[in-house]
Amino acid sequence: MIPVLHLVMLAVILGVSFITIFLMVFERDLLKMIVLSAAQSTFYAIVLYILLVPDVVLAYIAVAVGIYTALLMFAVKKTERFEEA
Amino acid sequence: MMFIIVSIPLYIVAFILYAIRGFRGPTVFDSTISIDALCYDVSAFMVILSVYFRSYLLLGAGILLALWAYILDVVIARYYDRLTRIGDSGGD
Amino acid sequence: MDLGGIVLSIIGGVIIFVGGLFDLIAALGVNRFPDFYTRLHAITIGTIGGAVYPIIGSAILVFGVPGLSLGVRLSFALPMLVIASLILITAPTGSHAVARAAYRSGLKPYRRVSEEVKK
Image (cartoon, rainbow over all chains, first blue to last red):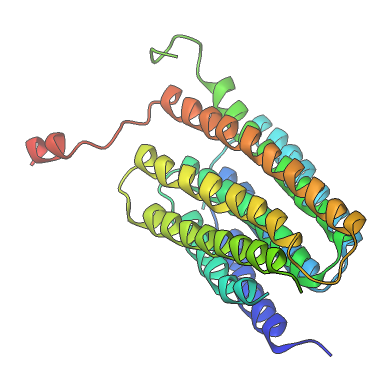
């Protein structure tokens, strides 16, 4: 049985995370898209933490905040920064 | 425990405000700084929630988040450091 | 429950609440300030006052929670001090790196006088 406080926190954070994904898909600046991706993975880290799975959080933070960001940054360095409409 | 339950909404509202500045920052630096502060505050929030859940095994995620949020800053700074030549726009 | 535990838990809880207030004020300042370089001041309050102080406060609070042994309290408190010192080292370094990159890339500071002269 999950208390009501945890459910409210999950609802608010998942709502903000959905808005982040929506803005990330329609973003034309690829560098800002990378930063928004880091923000979205941070919100998912809180959600997984409230659901009491810290081992998943350990792997998810290292991959989604750090390595994914660095790899996408190397990919953007090779191409152009702004996506043409 | 009362103080923790009272101060949880403050942290949630602060996360939402940081995320708003991250969404509508005029430059990339504003978004980067805002999301960086969001990561550090999420790390502090995780520590407070581990006291709330009474389990010290949950503390490892805070250390990892505080360290990987630093990588985000360094990566963004390195991207701009490659583009501008040294001594181009003056000053260190 | 003894008196010292109550005093420690109240001190830790008050520090956590004040850290939340610092965090809220810093987030409001980030949304209100006009420029990147002025937002950096608010961000500094948000990282040091909003992340380092509540972690130290929760390390104090753990010693006041009833019904825990000394080993459990130490295994709460020592990683908290590690996290606090890591944030204390990495947050100003990262902010300085981004500010240096912004200044090198030619981002001008906000000046109200020059805005009025332009009009």
